[in-house]
Image (cartoon, rainbow, N blue to C red; front, side, top):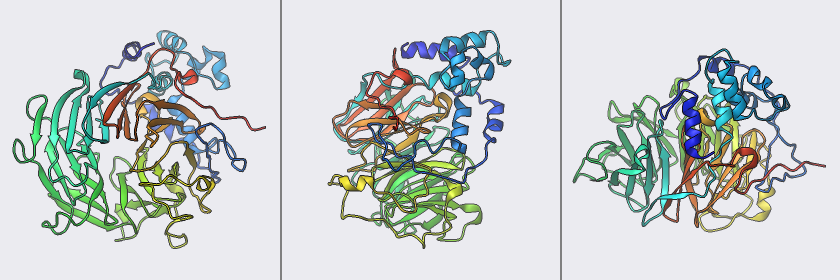
Length: 502
């Protein structure tokens, strides 16, 4: 089954390229389940092996395991069409379609979880094709929320917006203003009218994402205005600190940013001024994000190795609502599950960690700033072999995923999309030029995508289809798609499974 066949199947389910309607009963389903009080680290390496002192699958029985299964489970009536499904295997696509035609669920169409049950089997894994090759390193890339646009930022000032539905044609080529080192981040507004970009400067620029003719070059203050948004209290300070990440709020009214002066900044776009500045960490804030659609809660990650939670409804200046410890080195990126409860973080200790904010501590005073076992710099040194087996004595994470390499740059990780996979996977770039896809619950490396000749700093999964785009330091944007025989249970690319313990 190639991508077009998968698309036809998806359309047959009653949905086209646009975002599908959410089921009203989905939120009710996710309210089920009670939190567990125990937690064990689920460390799994890329070869599928586990250390002897680690129990496998600690997430079984936990809330997130239950919620993930709810998002990808067919109805009981559909499962009855395939007796094997009762033993935890997939219901085949043929049986799912048969059940839909017979209206066994009583809905007359697939639910969101049933759509995810079908589409989550098809992982992006065919040999990729090159979308674009530039003359400099690709640093950031991301699909728009509806999957019609793709944005990529490069070290040589170029930020390109591609029209996915129009054969990946360059819709706009933006030349960043006042570039310092590289384009560190980009973010599209929720209505996709505006794009903001940051560099190693306290000024974030905002530009129209859709004006002009297709492929037109947008040169700052020459062909188009790139308005500067000052994140420094001193508007004349253009070199005081750099911004590593910037994100729109869900309503598009605010921007949140993390900076090299150890702070978090919130910018009010309607008032056109800085509304909040928090001295949040003791080292660079590499990543920050809103926790959910409300915008009240924010997560941050820093080179001080801490993840912090900030609640603006009960904010005491300079004090986080809670802190989560477990990484041994600095944090390069974090991604929220969108439910205000769970998020993941990528760390320079060569691991991704899954967190539940209900396990957070009230302060950091009881913990050392960083569990530093060696003088090591990820920018030019390999991670010491003996450090790979070390574990934080106060680790509060739910699970740990290992196998990829977080070296040389701030490599990013994400949950897979809700609509097509039910967020049952975690995926990340890697210094070894590969993309790793992990199963959230088991920790298994379900796929390792090999193509690039240099570091994959960022990657993005299409919100509705089994398509993934990777951006690499080999200057290439590569598109991975699903094809015949690449179901998750028998993927063609390199794959590992958890080894049974004797």
